[in-house]
Length: 420
Ligand code: AMP
Ligand code: MG
Image (cartoon, rainbow, N blue to C red; front, side, top):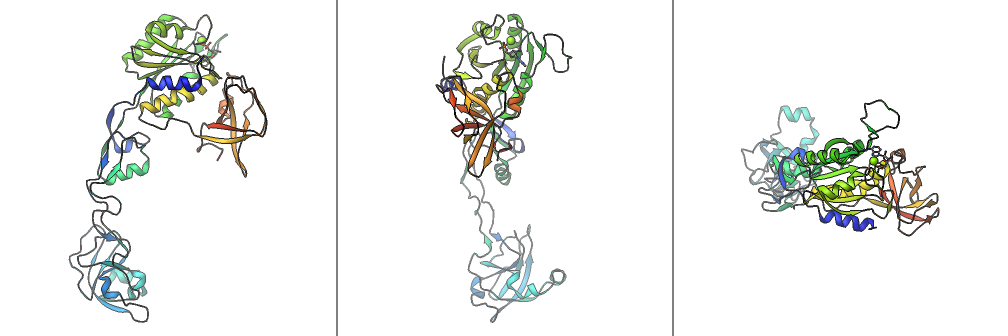
């Protein structure tokens, strides 16, 4: 039986980042950039005022103080979005608003607050601009001026391929005038449940039947990871049905298959068989609990199929360990690991000796993170996942961990979860 780390390495060795596609900038949230962004302009494009005040020649007001104010003649006014029609000459100033381009001849801006104009009510200033002002504080050249290129310089490398797009990147791309950018394509992830016992979720329960929850959990996990869920429904435990659904997924351009169930040692566990005939099985069974009966293979030569176990908790834990990193890699991400914290166990846990993933609720206390199990740990008890915000990892070969010991906890939801 291979280890979790070996299984992940094997899966990732068969997965490549998908090709770039142009996407409207506002739709690129969370996507991974697939091009170099080089600035073809200066941002800001021109020297502009950082304050409302007066554009002056710093040399004219070098001696200004409240006791010895320097008088200047006001020759014009410029608001954001306009260009001054007068330049600043010795002994003059131009009224200027935040964001307006610095008039020719000006070397600094004196804020309103440091001029006699500040004594006048704002309404008066608007009605009748001052013809003359007194400057009460000196300024040095460049004071209160945002120089052209302060944010980005013409020719500067702004973002390298691989950058994950957040709102701030979208803003930078917008200021560079990029309506679309190249990002890696999202994988189409085919989701297939298997089992004669499964009902669609709108069907009433009948004897021997349960509802198909895995398809929903998996579709939600795919969506959250950034993939596009392609739901293929339920395949019955018969080779023919599974084969035709897999072929339909391939026809619809699936980049990855996620099946659930049918990979253990039961009589009707057909996923393993079909992997053998429709493709190539790469491995089966991983040294972990829950999630041991995971299968991995390639369809049509290269399309990966991750055969998740049927038990709902096992399926989810296995998704997080194997499917999530595969989808992230296809999306172009290089950071594939889930965030972890070190947490002190508030109660003992027992383990099978395989790598254990214990459902825990992590909370932050004065001395750091603490973890408590979410009760019944059966691999069919999906509410143990629902109550959890993390998976405490018990190393291989360990059978019991005492209260007070520290474990690495893979966070399912942090920082959005309730632990922080
Ligand atoms: P299997 O590996 O197919 O034997 O499935 C293991 C367990 O998971 C069985 O109890 C199944 O009923 C259950 N199971 C399989 N698929 C699903 C599903 N899609 N939704 C909920 N439970 C499932
Ligand atoms: Mg089954």
